[in-house]
Amino acid sequence: MAISDDVFRRIQTASYALHRHRQAASWPSWLVRTVAQTIACDSAMLVSIEPARHDLDIVAWPEQATPGHDGLFDLHARDHPFVAHCALSRSARAFRLCDLVSGEAFESTGLYRTVYRGARIRHQLMILVASPGADWRALVLNRAHHEFDEEDRLALEALWPHVMLVERRLRHDRPDGGDGLLQTAAQGRAGVAVITTGCQVSMCSEQARIWLASYFGGTHLAGPMRLPEPVMHWARQRIANELQGRRLRVVRRDPLVATLGRCALVLDLVVDHGKDMHLLTLDEIELSAPPASLHKLGLTARECEVLSWVAQGKTNREIGLILDASARTVQKHLEHIFQKVGVETRTAATLRAWQAADVPLLGDGVTRPSSRR
Image 1 (cartoon, one colour):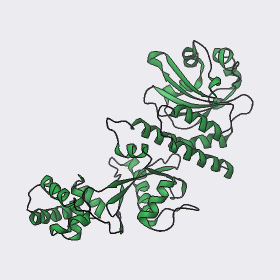
Image 2 (tube, helix red, strand yellow):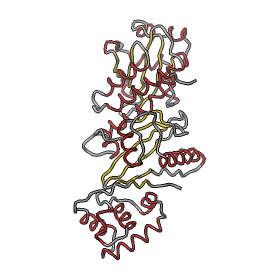
Image 3 (tube, one colour):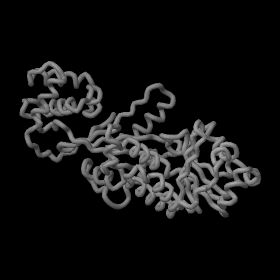
Image 4 (cartoon, one colour):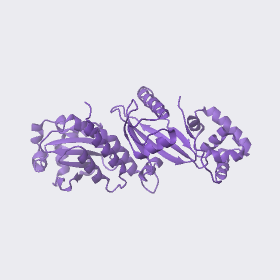
């Protein structure tokens, strides 16, 4: 079943709203409100369950929709079919209550008679989301009269990768460290897009459009979004490799790196063949020793690039992937660099590169996306 244009536009609006949010403390209420505004419902809840503590926590929209009962955990653990389902499977698929139990059977439970009937909840649509502080958490949409249909289910599943990415970003946005990409995203500098296996773009953030236009040329700032050819070629290969990886022990998940002046754009992909929706992430980093600043050391253009990436802490294999060369070729370049700058170790070469980079530099304005064969 295809999603209608109206629902697609609502999903796109919701995904932008989710990625714009920056405050971890208010994220649960923002999430349930955004999803409720996207998929018609009477109320929405983010439910967290910790069986070991016999604890059930609910963040609801609207706030007065929170069910009030002292035995909520025991009632749900005993009577709600989704709790029993989650004990056996952590599938990211969205389920309707009627997919798991008949209406008559559920209405005969103590949970329905004690809690749901008074809260006017007869139909539910549910999906598991990230659970950093609980055994499991679920987004739950409620209705009193009209059953959720297949389009509602597909819409909730389409929002799932965006919810997961924002959850990861907010979880790592803390001063004691964490993932550099996610911290950058929390500061509003990360780009994100969702693509299909055919590399059609279903959602692209404004920052991602700007970076793609800057690093790969062309017009990606308005109208229907199309990936630049180097990105499309890399993404198709990456998706195919991961599909093949289901039958192999080792899967190469190499990022794509494009450089421009003193900066580099790093593209990575989270592949989900089950939903045919793959999450493309973009992050810009500043080179601590840009290649153009290293020419005064007497190096060739390629040796300057190799030394620049050595100064970033990259291995020979990683540099080879970035520059489309073998690790052995990179090692040969590195041996020549050692001779020319009068050092014997990578650490010493890195120090010389940093010293050279102290000179003010204007970028050359040339985009050099790495190619993958």
